[in-house]
Image (cartoon, rainbow, N blue to C red; front, top):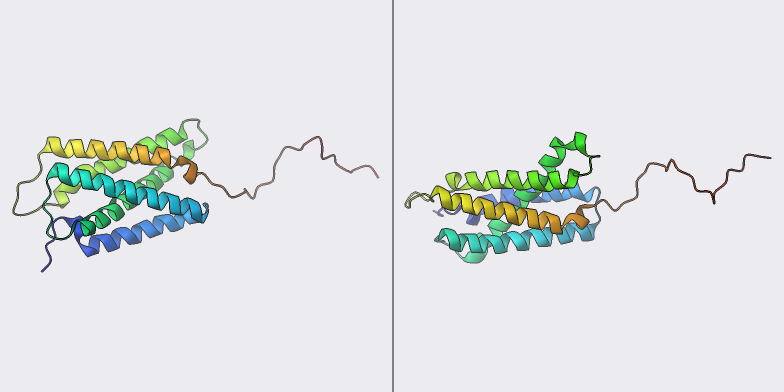
Length: 183
């Protein structure tokens, strides 16, 4: 039977995370063009895989399978978590969308949700034969994950901006477009 530690390398976690990521990207596809979705996906997966490589070395995780399988599952998992956190925060702070610092709140609270998930992940992802990670190491990993989430979301802000024209008509009229009311 396949070992379930670490969970990122199991196929069921990769399948569930992949389905969640596809769902989040489908939600984004309703307002963003394909090239933006592609850039968001590539940057999130590459950034999260690179971060997971260093966090696995930091936490001294012993893998039972190949490293690529672990990194692929972790990239899918954490990419889905970042997109889900961002969408959840968008839903929560929707009433304040017209405020000037909405984007900063969106990035900061998304990072906070990612930190909370990272902080709780070692409790779920436990190897029965080894000691659990010390809380200071878990806190450091959560802080690094939150910082990387802030950096990734900040770099991807131009790609999250809606590019399709609005269906609402403009309320202002230009002087170059006079009404032809006199007949």
